[in-house]
Image 1 (cartoon, protein in one colour):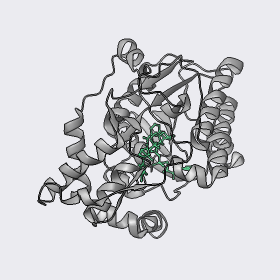
Image 2 (cartoon, rainbow, N blue to C red):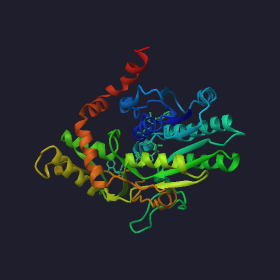
Image 3 (cartoon, rainbow, N blue to C red):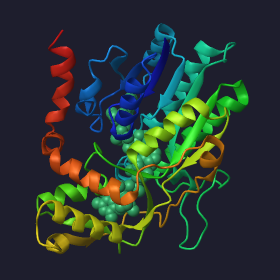
Image 4 (spheres, rainbow, N blue to C red):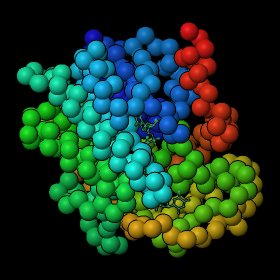
Length: 352
Ligand code: NAD
Ligand code: TDX
């Protein structure tokens, strides 16, 4: 049985990847290593938490000794590394947490993998999940980011992800560690922490609170349904070429203001409110410092070389997402009250 370590598996994207791998690959044992920061929520994993091929490990990737002992004890065959501080606004307020987790944490994992795999790299893979934000910002008419676009990060978050990508490449170039990287655009879907634009706005529409639009709302993001990202990760993990980078995106650019207006329309409709009810909640606020104008991904390489393309059309994914948050008000309530942070104690400590 192959042992696969997924880091950050209690977060938004990680929980979708863990569920996909546990359900699809019964011949893998999936270890989910997560510190359970504010962004980690074990309620995301209820459907697989008792699966025989799944183990949760509470731990911090910045703890080098703990990480090296874990790798020595478990002898993982593959690593899919998603654990990170992921929210740009938090990186502006507190950059050091991003530097510790995203840079030092990634270095600890690379060192530990190198130590146990050195001399027998065959069949092993270290896969780093990264972001399109490392490429910087596009002008309105620029061509989308390709894998050749030079790195030009602007926020402490994107700079820390760029640094971790460079470390991953350095371990491939210097030691031959079998690595692969993917850089993805903005994800949307169920289980996203409501600090990010879409779940924040859905929650605020539900509670008749202001919808904060940074600046004039003209910044552009390229949106991908999270399960399509999880499928792409599955594809790169199994078919990606070592030492390569793959861009992942939905070819689906939206200006923030247009996206929020669409969200209002769909959410009001699903709540049986008259059309336009929540328009009055739109509130233009001070812009994010260093706010990148536009991201857009050219995903031709993963499409032509590995055969991946998104399956979920935007209208379908968007409506499904709104419906999920409205149907799962308990999940949203537990996140907003902080109750979700008791789940680990209830599930793993009090049962012992
Ligand atoms: P998230 O914030 O929802 O989840 C991050 C997870 O990492 C949490 O479960 C958290 O507890 C865990 N974690 C944080 N610090 C840790 C530490 N020191 N040790 C162990 N675990 C720790 O993030 P997400 O949105 O699911 O993003 C996952 C990955 O994908 C990140 O690497 C992010 O950079 C990348 N990414 C995200 C997006 C997006 O749109 N959300 C797009 C492209 C790439
Ligand atoms: O309240 C808000 N108002 C607003 O106008 C928030 C939270 C955001 N915004 C804007 C900023 C961005 O232009 O909406 C856009 C999306 O913002 P976020 O949801 O914070 O995402 P973004 O900053 O684009 O980064 C996301 O995508 C790339 C993830 O958080 C990253 O982890 C990922 O790498």
